[in-house]
Image (cartoon, rainbow, N blue to C red; front, top):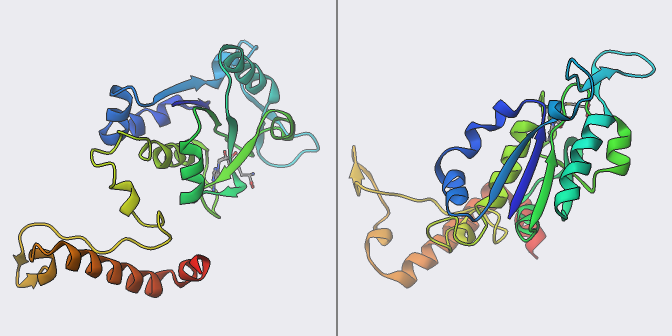
Amino acid sequence: MQIDIITCLPKLLESPFSDSILKRAQNKGLVKVNIHDLRDYSTNKQKSIDDYAFGGGAGMVMMIEPIDRCITFLKSKTEYDEVIYMSPDGELMGQSLANQLSLKKKLIILCGHYKGVDERVRQHLITKEISIGDYVLSGGELAAAVVADSIIRLLPGVLSDETSALSDSFQDGLIAPPVYSRPAEYKGWKVPDVLLSGHELKIMEWRTEKSLERTKERRPELLKNNC
Ligand code: SAH
């Protein structure tokens, strides 16, 4: 898979992809993440990428030209499945969207700033808009990293145990059961006996029961969606 992220603040995206699982995924050649500095596509001397909003009002707007030049350049080299714009009014990110996107081969993700991008970018250059929640961030970079992370960890071979992602919350419409590790007792706080029993079937049953309990308690609407 290839993910090309367009940003005017490339530094913000350095660390999320240079550690742990996302770094290993790239080192193993399972995903290529390219960060593109939008300012490289600006045609003026100051490398500016924003300007005042027509009609006035507070806040700058990201201009269409550098964005168009960047996307056109990327598209001249390869074909993309989706050109995504991170936006608070986009489709709400969720596990099923992460699953769908993990099946794609090539994605562009555009990060906005200021008041957002010139509307014509959204009308003519973007194929999908994604929000990570009903709140407003100062830029799309953290949101793009969240979306990319949720996709990349689903790619076959990225997690050391392939089945791990399948047992995570939301994957089967339920919240994941509680997990424990050594020591079996700490300050008198014990791990449930069944997990130490070595009885696979009982452990599975216990986990399913806890998953259901937790979902009922914390996210009852997920159970309704499942019916
Ligand atoms: N004026 C816009 C907000 C712009 S915030 C509005 O009111 O809708 C600046 C940029 O941050 C956006 O262009 C977008 O790329 C990013 N952003 C902010 N909140 C986001 C969210 N919840 N999900 C995804 N991207 C977001």
